[in-house]
Image (cartoon, rainbow, N blue to C red; front, side, top):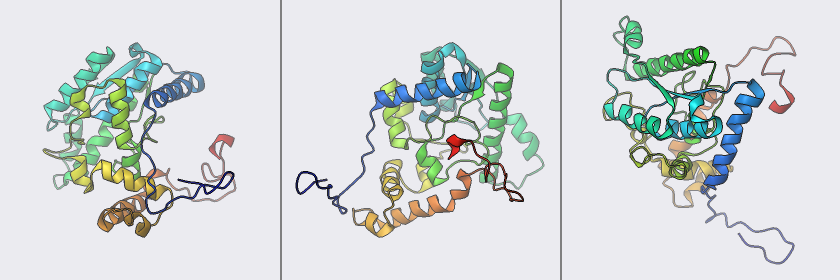
Length: 288
């Protein structure tokens, strides 16, 4: 980015310009801790948090941030394995529990999930995975009610933009500290916070079936998707993004996922019959 003379606006080289995905991890951590403290304690009068701990990096970073913001004694980590879940997910989650010294519960969801799926023998892998995800969220909300706590979301910006989450499950908690961080930024923050390397370095997986990975499901690596998403969010069309050396197929894949899952990033659409429809018309000043 250059300016021809003092006082002129900089000229962007649109062919070579790439938005940086680097973050100041120290500043981000302090801001997210303040966010959690303010939203929980100041706005809601709640001092405890419940985090579903999957053994993955997103939930680990969320647990670390909650422990820093509220104190580990006010954080409860809940592991919710299904009978086909990887044992490594449980042991990796235990690394976080041991490092933070927070309270923990392990609640096996197999009986609850199978109790429903017993009557749906034709359910494919996607339906089964959605049932598991929604069952886990039921557990988190109930444990939060029991403990006088609030469930904290763990979804990152990449997965939210790509629609890689179960609607009314992963996105249900009322607070989400990672929702504006790309996956690669979450990894950077994890290293800064001291999340165990075994968690940071392993291939991300929703752990819904054997040998499943996020990147194989998405058809693109997180590192590549994040760079394309950053340009897409700045308003660049597919052709201009491809000019920067990205394969048109990858650009089209990311674009299709973002546009095809836009509905998942909104509350249910309300049919308006008046001029006071909630969320369609009635908003707090801060919502604008």
